[in-house]
Length: 233
Image (cartoon, rainbow, N blue to C red):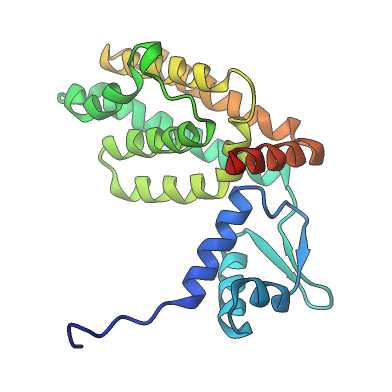
């Protein structure tokens, strides 16, 4: 390949990432139906890469195909999401236990402490940004425990929970509560209080898990409208 030759654009990958973003940003709501031709027209692509992207999204659990009526964003399955939250609790609790026993725990958590244990005046206020920051907190907490395979499994679980977690941050007061809860969790780990650290972590995740039980189509539409307003601003 010469210096002037560009790598071909992976059209299927581009479509996959865009559709997944549309789902996370509430532009495609659970239950929404669409055809391959509609997506191809919007993405300015042929149906072959569109189909490839859609089947990948299906394997990842984001959409499902109805052979007579096209494609559909996967409707909310509350039991499915609650099971994923249970997996999160198991993996993150074990990670906290290991961190409490680590000799270099302060070093491992230094980056997270710098982000979350700050004055209120230094806290971020944008809900989308804090939602991403929250996802990073939990990913890095598990990674800091040192088990790479568990960290990969945890990332996969959290990826499938992303739309739920983003909805959580549309609720009033959630940003301040997240900062406070993360600060307490980190403090308890640094104090090597295993029992209380795990209890605080579980309570923190359960609060998010309870969002699943409260979700309605109306709330999703509200979140979509809020997102659109933020984009326009």
